[in-house]
Length: 312
Image 1: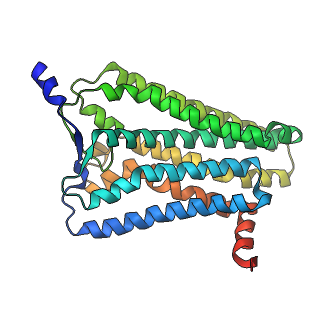
Image 2 (image 1 turned 30 degrees about the vertical axis):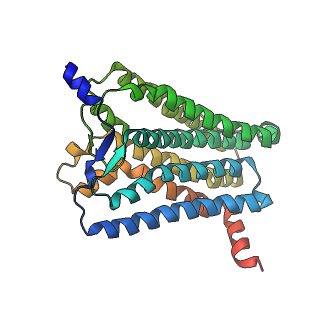
Image 3 (image 1 turned 180 degrees about the vertical axis):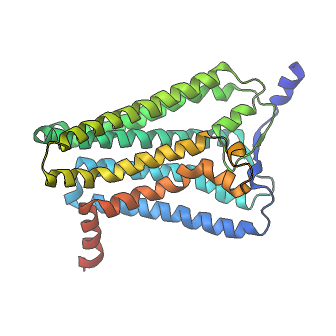
């Protein structure tokens, strides 16, 4: 055991084995990934810029939406540059510090996203259920304080949940994935500590269960109020809440895809399917956000039209 632990200390990099021997397809994969990453950055940046330039959109809901788009860009930047760099790598190695950094950034972005959706759900709850006090409760200073708290809360939750991994000794360095996945890294440790189970539970509670509970309570209260209001107000509530409900639902689907071990569930599926399914939320959520909000919220849609067709 002592010799095994001594050998583990020599590991300075991990090998991302899921790339395998992609041969000439690496050029095609590189172009597809680059276009997709570029599209994510452009779509989210355009939405942020439109909200920034149009003073009609300087409202709490749209400021919180900017933060959500920023989280999408951050999460994508934590993933796609590594994928692109690995396309032309022969060894597919990633140093341990860079692997930990990617893992930390991805989990922080995930936590920021769900917490941002919780803040947006709270904003809709105040707007629909307490419209007369909305401007007092959701003033600009409080909105920016909420955004700051979302990032600090997410950062601290990831540090608290996964800091133990920095002291682990590893007895292997082959990660069967295309990026540095936390669960797969833990499996490479010489002895899986009890902290691993505790950290998973704590992160799930702090960064998923609590925000999702706040989202659920907010929308249940909105639903209760909408049952007693006019048809016009119901339509307005549906219009503003639909993109958030779809975003939350898509996140839930992504969490299910990530949690299930697809090596057993779809053992006969192609390797590409087994790689992409656990990454479902990382691939599609960043593109879903700008399009769902851009096309479904009337004010943003009108703002797009003004900037595209009315500016001289």
